[in-house]
Length: 120
Image (tube, rainbow, N blue to C red):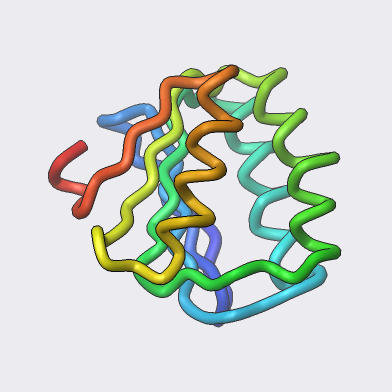
């Protein structure tokens, strides 16, 4: 579906989901472009589940976090997405950040944290 050195997006048709797998640290358009592409695919296919694999995730830059909150999240709220799944290990250094996102996103979506995609 979409693949760069930084991110891979796959449409998991059987789950009516988009899987976003971060590969390495990125910022600016390298971070934002996959998410913009995903929004178009969500609209096109009426996808209802967003899955982020944080296995190789990273802490976003302040500018990208601001963009995420001001542009990406509102577009998701106004989309067909109903469920957000984070693939994250219990000992991940990103757990604090993801737990914060879980709290914020729970106002709009069902949010689930799993250790492996097979758990979803």
